[in-house]
Length: 324
Length: 313
Image (cartoon, rainbow over all chains, first blue to last red; front, side, top):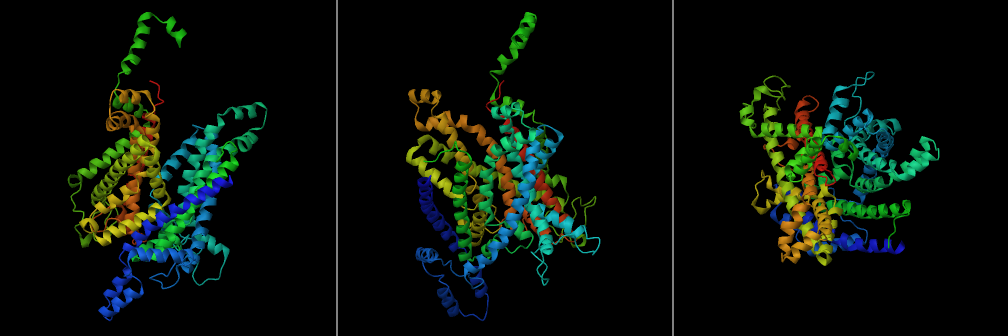
């Protein structure tokens, strides 16, 4: 097992290098929105412009820029943001907690809803409940998530008002009331709509997976044996069936968690959530390549790491799986 | 079953034996259709999609308005008989824009998926057929593509292609979006085709073709591909639905097709800024995306069932 993990980690190094080269070439080819702003400024002369480009390192050949970047990154320096003029590390330290806070809340809420629904749909296959649940899951996978977000704002922010205060029922954006002292109810109030937006879609995915793996398990011989031994139905479902049915879900959960780092691009954009996804969208429009590089590499590292963690978890949960 | 048949008169037995025999020669197309028809939601999806496509194609006959003509005295009108989806801030009829926008959105999705299928099939076929180093290299490339966060690269590449106007593209062109979505969507198909090829090339009919002197190219095209096509068809139909969402998402974020050309995505973006006083501007384009995608997903589901080789005739 240890050898397997070491091999996988070693394999990740060339993969990350290739990704970084590809993405570096792309991000550096982006025209910097910043220079555009300077170019249109009449107070800045041509000479200043050249000097600025020199200062910002925009004229260095791309392969030398890449070697510099790589050298700095290996020493823990992600460079400066061209737009905000401060270290990228600081910006990420600010944004990442916000993104994880939203992502993990949505993730836990989704699992808490999806697991019982999935079990129930499988146990009552072809019942009305099952039909409603599978139709809901199908719709959840087909709905454009950004449209869902807009609908939530239209309904719960624009139309439905709080009957006591006359203000919108839920806020349409932000993380907390600006200027108000920190309070948990206020934070939760701001979480409701973005979490609902993310959870509606995730519940659909998890439920569909759990239902089908539950159906696979329920028809296995050992479940019949457990029933034949006279075990109560609850014990059969929760101890014997669910444990095995959750296995395939591990893969999906691993993928979802690794995607959390980048954040929910659409949710953060719609709800003006100061997270990684929104930072990426804004940086892409302005050509802020150090920020773009940092976010993409961080995300690639997480995808590779969670792939490995998922495989290890799998081997741990299912002794039939052996890695050499 | 057997005992039942024995008790029946000989004529009935002959009649009940006849249809299965006829079915043995049934073509792939009619067999698929026969199974597909049983999936009610898939048939409903097909009808809905056909209606949407007809409306989009014959848009000029259905609606009297010009999608891009602004009419300032009809600004931001709610849905009514003359404007069933209402109008936007320029007084443009939203139903008309949804139909014309559908042309762009569906064209992008279909073209991007076609590109993805061609690349994916090529990569998967070569990797699966030749195995060894070729397979290893191609699959490593596929894994690399899968480790890159897709949406982020989509954003980056569309921005890059548009700003640099690479390949002589004008800023309103839909080609960059087609290329970008296509180039980032082939990995699933490649894996599917490779898996099919790995098992098909060990089958007797491949051996027979090889021993009768067929070259690799002929074996791949005439013998392996036709047998590997079913899962690709299913994947393609689901990929069209995904591509519609991807395109509209990119346009919604401002990285896709730029206004004044209407697509479902940039209409949504347009509607977002007005949703507090004119929610219909955002609601209807999104509803069109939702209906189209769900219809295509149900069709894909039906195709998966219908093309399942485990069917017993």
